[in-house]
Amino acid sequence: MNIPATINNDQAKRDHSVFEADIEGQAMNLQYLKRIAGWVKPHKQAAIISIVLVLFASALAVLLPVLLSRVVVDGILMDTPNALIPDFGLLALTQWVSKLGGISEVSAACCIYAIFILICHTLYHFHRVKLASVVLFSLRDMRQDLFAHMELRPSSFYDRVAIGRVMTRITNDVQALIELLMGLGALIGQFVPFFIALFVMFAINAELTLYLLGAIPLFVMVTYFFRQATRKVYRLIRNTVSQLNQNLQENLSGMQVVQLSNRENFNLNVYEGINNGNRKHEFHAVNLESTYGAFMDNMVNLALAVIIWVGGGAALQESVSLGSVILFTYFIDMFIQPIRVLGHQYNILFRAMASAERIFQALDWDESVDEPVKPVELRQRTAGEIEFKNLSFSYDDELPVLKDISLKIAAGEKLAVVGPTGSGKSTLIRLLGRFYNFQRGTIFLDGVDLLDLDSKDLRQRIGVVMQDFHIFSGTILDNITLGNPNISDERGIEAARAVNADNFIESLPESYQTELVERGQNLSQGQRQLLAFARVLAADPEILVLDEATASIDTETEEIIQSALKTIMKGRTSILIAHRLKTIQEADRILVLKNGRVKEIGTHDQLMANKDVYYTLSQLQFQDVSI
Image (cartoon, rainbow, N blue to C red):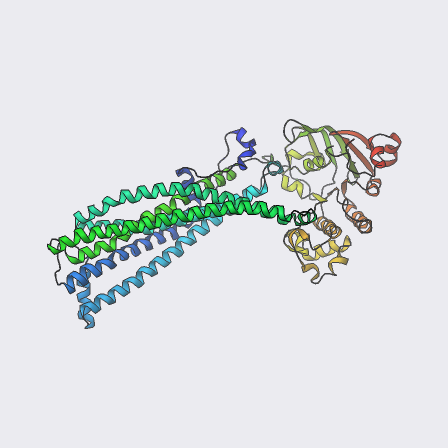
């Protein structure tokens, strides 16, 4: 695994807007290529094999026209072999095969040609296969490293960065690097024949070679200006495609609202406008590509005319052989094709550099929750005593959310937390799970400072059930056990039965093996909540947190859930953030937060007698309103 470099600039660490910025074409950055090579290094043996294969294939690709021109035309048909012009031993090989097989020299040359073609294409095939394996394995490792790195970023990071931007880096940007590395491999396959052919041409006729080389600067210049123009067009195409996808996702995901508000025609007109813009840019790109292709084809024909004119005249004067002229006509394509491929790789290169910058920007992002160098190991089973001491916290270092919170929760106690919107209820729970670094104060678990604990160890001791319960792809049983090797299938089923979830699960066609669709939409809200309780009970944490877990269910389902709650809260320290009066009344104590401060704490009867914030909230049926 590559170990990412760290960010030296602390300000850059906080500037999450860089994830929202569009990075288009970037200049060649050798440092990026060097870092990419770090993922290629474990597969260097396959890379070397690929290079060796393409070298042999390229050499054969050059020998094929030499065989036709120098051996067949000059040596056999014209019977004017010239020992001063190299044929790389092909004439002697042809004569040997002719004698060995008792066939004519032309037939022998045809046999050699067929064998060379077969070997050449076989080598090219295995070269491409090896190259693809190197690229795909290398970037598979990069994608895994990137995914693993982004999994470790804290909640504070994802509060400020759009998930779609992170997904783009792991998917689209890595895909752009696949195109880059495959393109570099293709360039090797094109330029090796170019230089071998150049050597052969100079050996045969330096004058004709210089005529042909004179056209190359023109080809390069035209290709450069063309790619500059297409680069701008393709950027516009990518932007309009992104707009199309965004508009499509937005309208399809909100289809019920679209139909209820009769926005179909309006949305269609908006989509049509974006689509027409995309069509215009695509058509412009087609025109440019067609013009470039026609120009290059004409230039090839012009170069061919020059070879025939100059070379034909020399052949008539017998200063150059006819086979040499024919050989030059074959080599024209070997000269032009690398320039075409290089031009095609030009845009890919600059897009890949932009993608590499985005990828390494993500890999170098070292924002994380502080972890102790030598963490304290908790007992196998903690008591679950929690203490907040002078705790203050702000998400943006400016507006405080929690202010000097001090509170002690006894082991096994059930504490309800209530308060108006923005009072800091959910923030208190997030800090208990160490999802954020808090600025001032401490939190203790069984007398141990949370900052001295490994966050993974701590989170294994806390079970959280939220109103928006997340469903993963897979079966119902998979969503209970979560792939935890310490939770057997039998334990997961037992947990589901304990919270009364087995009634609806066993009524499904495939029971616990029922596949859940995206976000568990084939389950009701109440069923998803029961599944969440089963998940927590199977994990068997010492601390239970219910973050408005019963806020969106009907009264009938709540009775089932209340029974499940009694089961999972038994013997556990429980923190209940709830709006339902029944859930709150059953708590041992009630904490009332307002504006990030502890306003009241006590039993239901005590707080009702105070006739303060809690009393007002209870009169409003604990709906989330600002006071």
